[in-house]
Image: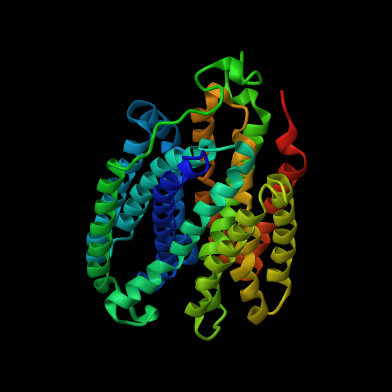
Length: 397
């Protein structure tokens, strides 16, 4: 079997896991307007759903790396599915009791499961093959992720046989039970999946990675630290790109707001497909990141400067500009870490906590300056990512 063919089976299993991550993230996007309407919350309160989920990345990213070190990648991945099942099980009493606090707890546990899973699957897919084609592999995984983003609202509407705006708290039991059963089955499958334990270059022998040899701390890798900062702000604005279009369309009183929800996933998938085809043969990871930052800056300006019936499409398609940022930032930040690879991966996973802070700030801005002007928050963050794409990743100490 060739080396490239040996990646296929592991990538299929990892793709299933990225699909699960996307579905769990999509649930958050569904719950923001859902709880706002059913529990009569402010925008800032409703965005606590996303904040509670992504706060777990800040808390459990480094413990997750310890779990991987003790039980390995495969068992860690399996463990995350059972944590997801616990989280979704808590949504049922939260709905029956109409308890926002219990919803937030369930979201935090879901975020914990997400943290544990991403701490395993991101470095695994990055070091599974050559580092210069890591963005291509992550793009393949990204398609699996983005295909699942819009499914929760469609699935819940199909199971309840109600229009999405008519689904109430009392309707969630059946779809949630189905989701829990599927997740438990996936956890069992993963436990016996043919996923070998792999090591990054220099992780076992320092001589294989001279740059990392002799270093004693993660903070001695400036390209990693700046990459973590870029990833922190990226995940926050990516969540806005993926999860706010339904809320925005409803807030602007646009007809058929649910019709816009499929486009962020489509935009993200289209960008991933381009990455799969073009990286690294046609375009490098770095150039792809630079192009995406320019597209994001331009699109962010169009969102706030065009009429709502136009800007809603800019919100829906902002995900296209975001698509190759994560696949490019991750390998640029994790390269040359040697024995610090797992800890470095944990720092990058902790950066996903940006998904907690930035949507919360966005929700507060939405209450303050309105839904459209709140998107000004995206511009400085995309400019920071642009800095990393041009200069930050090259800094070595």
